[in-house]
Length: 385
Image 1 (cartoon, rainbow, N blue to C red):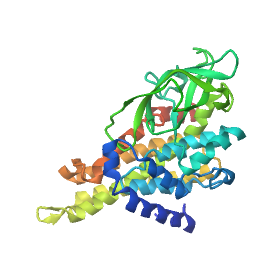
Image 2 (tube, one colour):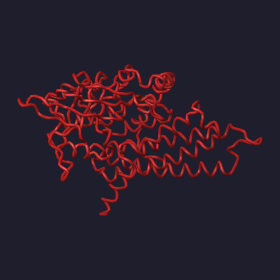
Image 3 (cartoon, rainbow, N blue to C red):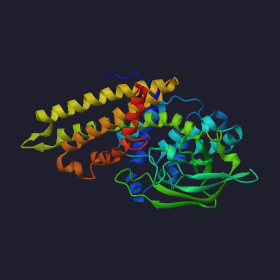
Image 4 (cartoon, rainbow, N blue to C red):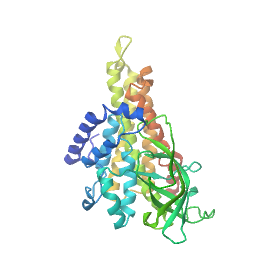
């Protein structure tokens, strides 16, 4: 089906990003996977290309208000090459919007220029060892000092993407005692500098996929966080997290569709070349039917994602909409990539083939940003159930 989401300016941007990924990312990517993280120069280079300052006002070195379509194009091109550009999508696409929406003018002057040029990398610290998708159960505490000048932060976080390379962390913590009758009450967001005394990085967590994207455990032991680093209003953290999860879930849906598209392309190329019983694998009816099913499913999900991007641009994308997109597109992506790997036969299990990397990389999409089960709960609630 013909897509109408992008115009000539978007496609010109796509050409720049595709060229950058082909020439500068793909050749170096195996080394990034071995290292367990992307190099710092990558983010400086992305800053030079204008890929870090989406929606950052021009007076702070950004591009000004920018359609999410440009970030969607980056996601599509990264998936097309079966690589990752570090935790760019976390820093710029998910955490930066917290600063844009909630930071006061002094905070914006302090942080936004570095975010736009690559000097400051961002991460968000929500998940805790005993708290996954249930954000209301966060136990990390931030107690205001007697003189009111700083918070004392204590607790631990886990599964933090970009935890080893980021400079600033948006940390969800309790600034009021835990109330079992109103678990969402008392959560606040604090911006924590990685150089703060008492801030610790634990293990580099080993994952089955996304090896070039570092994932860390974090600890906070009596970390002094200036009150000037409170993001938004005290006690409103749960509301802020819920608002920004909408964009995060849209991104995950965009990524799922893009990875499925890449899998279909890899499988189509492979079955045309691979010979079985003296004939190309592509000549068998089963191959044709499987790829036809994959194409139909992906096209349906793509239409859903495109509509979601348009709604995001107009400010009309709801939490229920985002949940539907994430649920449908990630589940679809898992099915499609699995089928495309099967068409590769034994070679699909070999890491030298990009389909294998897609298979392991995409699995977490049904977990991160709220599990599929959480998305179903959100959708059910929207139905009045």
